[in-house]
Length: 122
Image (cartoon, rainbow, N blue to C red; front, side):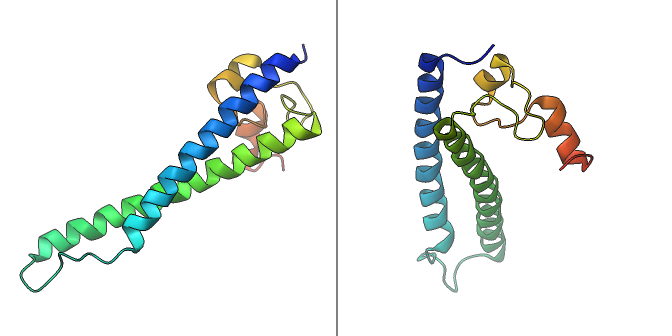
């Protein structure tokens, strides 16, 4: 069953909102990682510096994951413009509505996603 125009419009709004939220988060994380720590000096304990470095590494990892989600969101928005949203990129099968509700940026069915991640299909 193909998606209705009003359903696609709702998904598009969710995707655009999610994209803006991730961009704000990335901007904050990038600022935190790239700004020099003014409080660092000779008096700061080495363990504190280690904690600061750990936090920066976590921020970088989170940013990397969010960058991936951002790419998926952009692809889903492309599919809306192409009028192919809700169709699996790999198999051409319809992506179940429940999956799109849970992951609006999904561009593959669960089965295709699993096979893709295992390297079975490309």
